[in-house]
Length: 241
Ligand code: 5GP
Image (tube, rainbow, N blue to C red; front, side):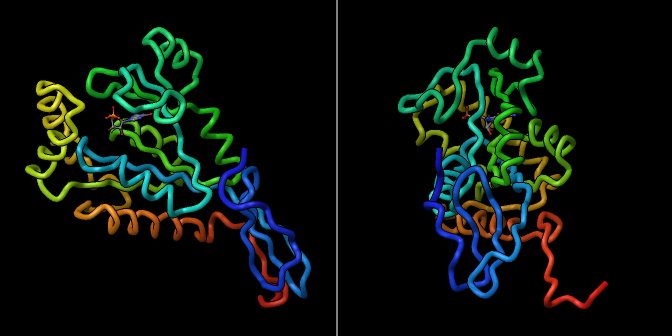
């Protein structure tokens, strides 16, 4: 499988190049037209949470279309697919028995019961992507986010807020995919989730999806160059230690 651009030849007349082939997220350092050094990095884990209706799915899809090489973790869930949702792409739709068996095998990096259904992030896929140096985007609820922050203290978390409660309700009604009772349930849970926003590293208020996607993309791009993630040396530029 390959995401993003095609792997290009190493010899290019520039100093930096990010290899976009999946399986590597290496930064190649070049000098005088040849690779001087290969820098390995561990991928950044970006956790996004939002109350239902804040527009998080649209936002995450938008970000995935503008930020190359972002691995999107496909969760497992026991809820039924909504119209248009594809098994294996939007979610892995499983029965409760299948979910519990996987959970008991330690198959989830985190899991939570949300709106009466079980949701979980597959641990193996997540670890595999991070180990290969891919940046991972996770769309999970506030309980799951708390578990992940404990398991991966270096995770970067982003809370997406709707501009107002009225807007949140309007968006849920517009969606027409949930029954009225379900909408009320989601609204009261939304209030609980919003109370957790200060536990996150960043806040994005989603007034306009393009603007919000831009903000999320900026956060991800900045994380890519966090010095603690790069094993990088500049022997010809740094003073000797
Ligand atoms: P929905 O069913 O509307 O797609 O998602 C409902 C909620 O479940 C959202 O808040 C979403 O972030 C959350 N969710 C989706 N996947 C996961 C997951 O793997 N783990 C956890 N903890 N929450 C998830």
